[in-house]
Image (tube, rainbow, N blue to C red):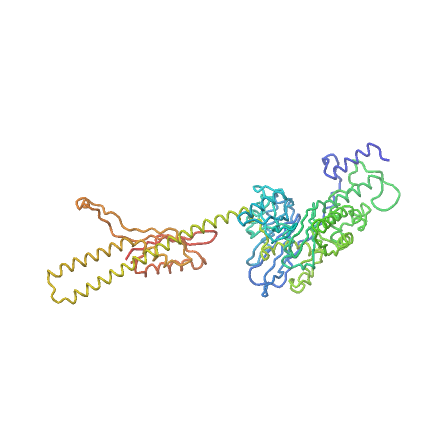
Length: 634
């Protein structure tokens, strides 16, 4: 039996291993602890290239960035193009090394990839996904109804989280028809941070997603065929695991389980060091020769770093950590036996989730369970989980060389345990084709866009009504001018036919013609602005947006004679000043502007044009040409 002093020192040492005691209390061993041997950078593994733009999926793992590129084939389906892995040493997105490593990885992977759209999986353990049942309400009240139900089922703050939802159809609940919806809430700071890293790297993302939706995309796109009935995916992560149940590619249940790789590592540390405490060798029977280690002998305990290396070595199916095993008298099979209690806790939580799905929700049993994760998944683990749950269990292998989308076995150089690491990145790449929920266009941004769109429609409707009124008035005035011209032409013919013209007969005719011309001129001056606007609207093509149109219709003439005359005198109309933007293909902006100027010059309403400004600018992230054009009235 250990003395009280030995128990106290042991408790302190375990506290250090578990992170509860300050590390200064223990003297560091002379030899540095064995570090986890990282996998070499993978890739790229390339298949047959496809034409056109490609979709790239990015997973920001704890120790590596993983990429998958897919493209659309001639038959309309999607094909695997390439994948690659780039290790990094960043301690999270806040670490400056994260941005530098990400930029380098993106630059290397995107080289020669052509036009691409990028979707990234946000590493957000605090993300929350809810499966909601919404009462049927009018469309205008749907947003408020979803928010009300979401706040009851989930914990989030709209100011601190990005929130959005998707209606998936009708369901019957206790005989009442309701709307089925899936909603998510993700910390806004995490979304902004990853978006900023990608934009600073020079690769702005088309969208961001989270792990539950990335896995859903594999089934929703039919890339991973689902068996008849319900299928589940267990993703084993670092600090926890995600269990999801799908029916016809749609999430039915999603649950975060706080049992993962760290739990197994902690279980191994406690088991091995517990044996050392008791003075027994780490494995196998035998005499108790070495005394229990004290605080002065910390090197005889298994540190978490070496325990992690042993677990990862076991998962990878290699034996690179043989030196650590022999140091603590461990066999590979015993490492698995020692982490089994943590694995059992994980399996029990999965089993409870299945029971809730079938018993509480009244759904059919699970027909298949796919295993994936942030580390390699070895076959013995899969077999053990499947045996405990009595369900068909398999490794999630979306890049299997037997898959039709991998172009004749392009991924045959990787084993299934390595291929499963790219499942999340592949799901991200499929986000665009399956129209997955996008963290960059959450509920608040959609609502702002809808408000702006509604305002634009109102303005457009008012402008269309005003234009219609102007066109009607212009048609009426044009008809009046046409009639006046006919009368004037008749009078001119009458004058030519009259052979007995003299000063007495011609003077009244001249006065009448002059009066008619003045009357026509007044009509011209009155409706010149409407005619000019109509002419400009007719001549302006769709790729030229008018910013400002200013008419110079003359004004009061300066001088002293207007007082003597008793009425003001007006200067004749001068012309119109047009300011606009030329949009479209940036290679033909100047030629489009030249064609527009030629149309103005050849119009019978204008006699000459002058360009006073012609400068390239950027408008709505596109290159345009801003111009100012002066056109004189004919």
